[in-house]
Length: 171
Image 1 (tube, rainbow, N blue to C red):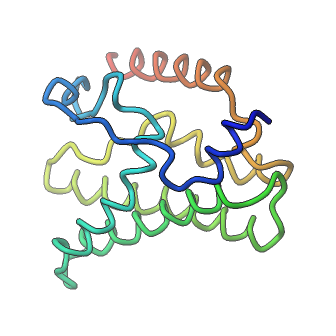
Image 2: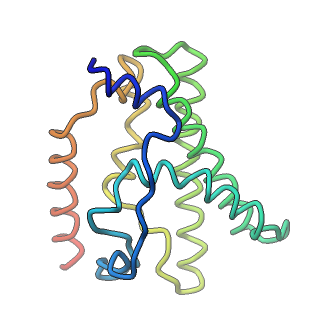
């Protein structure tokens, strides 16, 4: 593994978050979306701790299920990211169990939030092909950590899935 990649996996703040501008908003035909060259997975990963701070500060209504589910979603994304970037090439049984739980909870809370938004006729919490694909990571992690085998071929595959998904949505 290249020295730069080793440093990437060791550092918690390897990426700077570029300024998000108004031209990064939109892009979806039905759902609001962030897009453009500054919106990358690394930026999104690095933004999650900030989202946790914002959520803790402003989403404080204990009787509001949306607030509760957003807290739980962010907590599980943080756990997923922590396990993805702090474990070795092979998960221990305990790490794999925690990874599976965090992944399943991410899917569960996204679906709950989407359903609640749908009930009040809001198009929020778009579940993308990448989100679906992520739900398969724990199965892959039984063999080897997805971090060590993820590559651009998979990203191209996701692009094909997104194209197919978008085409199906147009029908």
